[in-house]
Length: 563
Image (tube, rainbow, N blue to C red; front, side, top):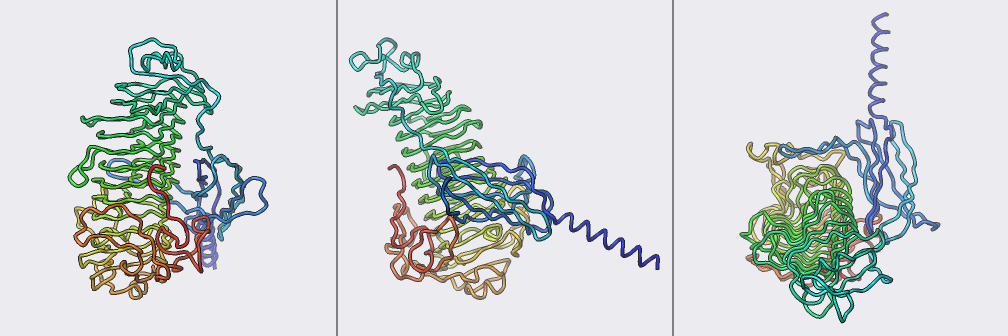
């Protein structure tokens, strides 16, 4: 009898211990914003079985109707790569509300719940950042190249930038007339809502050999940076709220390179032509190097002949509507980034190694939405990754997308198109790697089964001339049906054929250089109305259901590059 009582007490204590581990205890709630997004990270304790959820709704302040957003992602992760690792292990629910209006105030309601106990509802009031505005009530002063003198009037302009900067104050707009200004450091700050502006006067190129930005609230517009010696074009110190707009960079190895402590830069409508050969240029040299800094908007730029297009965003960065092509490494490289980095509506063409790089993710989620990716390299550079959203992208590749496609099992994946051109390999290729390649420097341990992180469905596939659609953990699958029966993902996947679904299919057979163009869908093809609804992602779809890929039929295509 004593044994039975002791066993009962032991069993009850184990059950209580398991219950305590599975119960969720909410902790610190952090939030931040960009022009178009609000991100949150909500630390928790417990939830060892990962079944806690957090619904998200939002509305403009003062509005009656709440709108649904994607639920937050469940994150339980400690990122690592070679000899580096994340700043801590993250146990939390995290995510973003997207496509908001700049300079507006929103309420975000978060409803955390767990069937094992614990939960809380919180409502945040957050403002998105306002789009930068050039001051209109400050002085307008004129500058020409020179060594000193002048008073800034059009009839007697400042002779050189040093003379102009000596008298600069917040709200001033300096018009730089044509000529060579050499190398210069802009280190006179403006105020948070009143920049010091340095702008081309419009009568010819205001040319620089290099620029350093050493003060916050500085605005650079319409300037020409040019070299035939590589090196750095524009280097930013650890400063915030800087605008770089409508500038032209040619011949630099690093065209724009920020400091690690930079914050909230707006880098828009620039043209960047680096010094790399698009195939043999190697992996060094960046178009826009964010240097592990946070809170930036990088948008509407045209970037070519670099190694990577945009790289190393730390946390809470938005990268959108860029036209990136002819690069020798990766199109978008948010490597070593943390939660809520978001990349949408970018066109990536002829990226020699990969379009999207994950080496590594230090913390999720990341968002990849409505990007169009066409090239000979891989679609992904999967190494070490956490949770991410992959929605409404098109990937066109010579052969398979990546040899580590099993890493997609950490994603929420919907409404993407995977097009394999030429070759006779499956469109998804996921084999165990060689012992050398499984070193922790490169990959997570191989795992081919779906788990609590996995939600992959409604994607479209063209496996070209291959007799098999997928190769997964040493086994081949001839079609989507046999694949989902065995693996448990893509139950509602769709077989598509590129020549039938796209209005214009001009990808060459040998996959030589492809001219950037839009792969819009033909009306009535089987990629239309074949997707699933994702709140806050495709609420504006036409027809019966969202289309696959980035281009929704009946809606204008995104604008890529400078406006």
